[in-house]
Picture 1: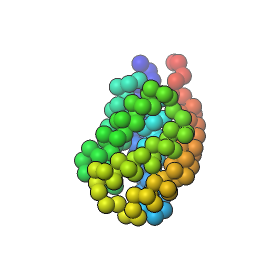
Picture 2: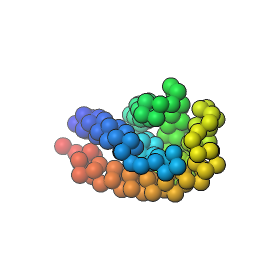
Picture 3: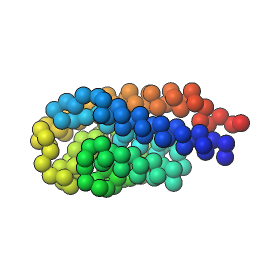
Picture 4: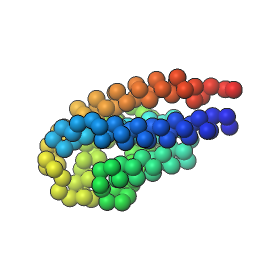
Length: 152
């Protein structure tokens, strides 16, 4: 019970900083860095199901807002990826593969994307892999430093 407020604060900070980083980092041919998507997978593997689902909905809503996407576009995908991550666990390769699939998801639901869907898929794999590695390491480091799972 002692960890619940700490987990909440850690999650809110992850959302806010993740969205800020997505906006600050440069776009490569209209393909950004999927910080929030990787954070959803990280949290889905480490949190209870309800907390992971709430985080996925919040991260998806934030992604829709900062990217000017239609409502529920990212929320639905982030929930599906969170569920898949809970089934098989967090791996950086899953995080890297989920980003190109997200590009296809956006092309299906949103339509025309800048740079074309094929180019976006080609760029999304290395960008997703780099983001998955970096964000996974940073989130893991700060989770340890904040003593989220320490017994008190």
